[in-house]
Image (cartoon, rainbow, N blue to C red):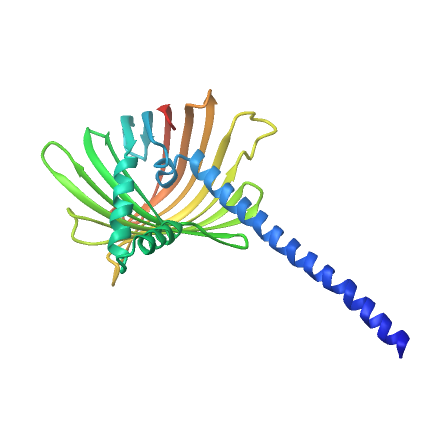
Length: 295
């Protein structure tokens, strides 16, 4: 009995630190996977110049030049100059406003604690700029800190934008959800859902898309950074009893070809639009982008 009891004690004594080490290993592995997911999402979206990432820049100037062809007799040229400026002071005031609005206590320490809790859950951005024809706009965003679970990342954005042209103005509101899955190093599978509404249209629009984004797929051949995307999606007007307005399948590629501020873009695909009787319409869009500032 002494021998059996001794062996049991020895086994338990060895198992306890082993289990503790295994727990630490699992936590470490989870932390590394979470970091890989979030950093990959941020890196690919930053390279694609997605608005939700690009607005992180304090300010930048962008020149876009190229063409679009979608089955019409002529090419449509693209020529656009715009800039964006991030207003950090305004963001801080908005954060303080929300913090005071949320606080139920008059104690300054309680207010500060609730403000810190809010900052850990939600972030805010405010920016102004000029783009297009031209038009002046202001944009405000509320978004959550990305939630990472295993190899998934979930982000939700609420966007408000007001733009003014010479003769009219428009107020826009968007709710966007990004669900990303890391399926290989620098390779993301994305599910995207968007609800969009504007003051000059009498209905809401829903967009659904799924895509596969790959960062540097030709790194052994092309030494500069590039990214590609395969995308399929559809859009409908009206949330209830809404009919599909269009389908699309696209291939997109973006490559840095000079320094860190010059990029080449190409989009190739086919649209099936309701007003064309859902007849497949191939298109190609080619354009260059040049940046200056904190891009």
